[in-house]
Image (tube, rainbow, N blue to C red; front, side):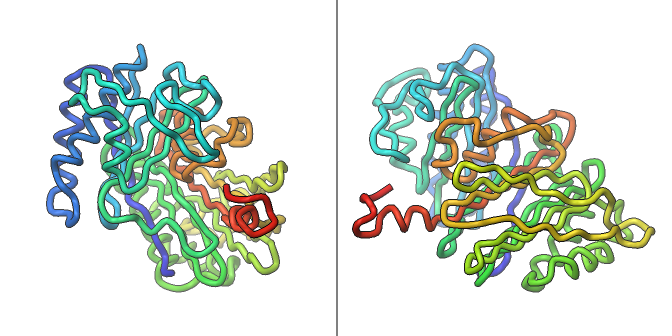
Length: 356
């Protein structure tokens, strides 16, 4: 599969009924002209997700939304009570691991509730803990976020919630998987130009040599304000992840209860100076492993493993949970999550104890 880069999300703060109406109108405009989408469904889902935030919190929250290759993705995020039991929102009934059965209810939205949102969505997931709740709904054609043994997703939120993001991420999955997070210096259009230069290079040719790619990215980013980067290459046959980082991109590999911090070097790409020295670092990989990469809009002391059952959820939900809890609020913020699904294959194989 070729490289897949993702559009930045927009953010609509939800505190009042007027915010609900504004979100409904914005999502309707974004969905206009997309095949396979009924505008009524899009507006209904946006309204119910936003109304749910008002109904279940006292401080409000926000909705992230973006256009995907074939539809719309929405992430409703709040700092409400959440968390009973871990990983399950207060309006849901826990069932089998990785599944949620919603209690039907009526409220101040369009009167259909989140159970209808789940029915209308091509993908639905939710995660809740004492810090709040994240609900994911994708509408329209399924977004290609899987390839063989891989599953990935992320959030990219520009400063202020609108406009161009100076962050970007991209993934390519062939025999190996390559993952990139790049952060143009500062924010706004000039930072976005620097990030696009690196992503364009990433999309142009399969990444097989990290050292060579970072050096080419340095040249591609000349003439821009420059930026920082973290790029990984995962070899599932050798069960190994190789990482090259320049600047303050943070990363973790989570595998069998262990957390490995990804180590790069200080520096900036795209400046007039010679390219920074590149250090390749190697880490263990394997079935069930999860990679997390984040720009410096996320505080460095984050730990996905501290959230009960979070890693069982959609990568976009994982990313949004970390962004909600650890976003600095004064910069663009990006979190990318890649999961090796071979652990599910092993659990579902005959003699291995059944399904997920």
